[in-house]
Length: 105
Image (tube, rainbow, N blue to C red; front, side, top):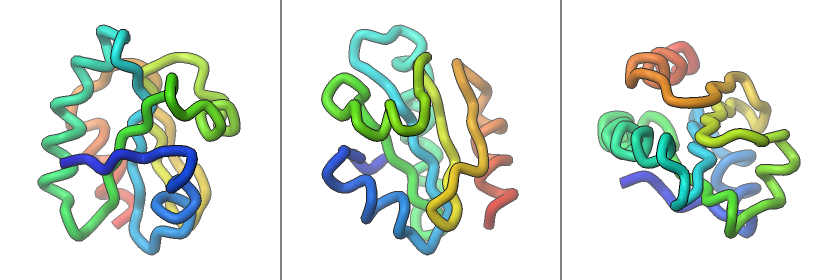
């Protein structure tokens, strides 16, 4: 299951991770986010132990959404070494996300 990422744990979970990190910025009211959600859950299972996969609810956690300029959701950011190394805005097929992670492993 994808980790719940919040403003409180973002620094430790995402920025200080020694593994690549995929963060899905989403909201409960967002239709396209509900399409991406199950894909993110699948990826979190498949990459367990190899990468960190999490979801950040932008309504409840606005600090890092604002910091990284997330204006449209869903937005998926890829992090490596505490830096953003990839961005996917809107719904994309699963392989777009898995190829991004594979490129960082």
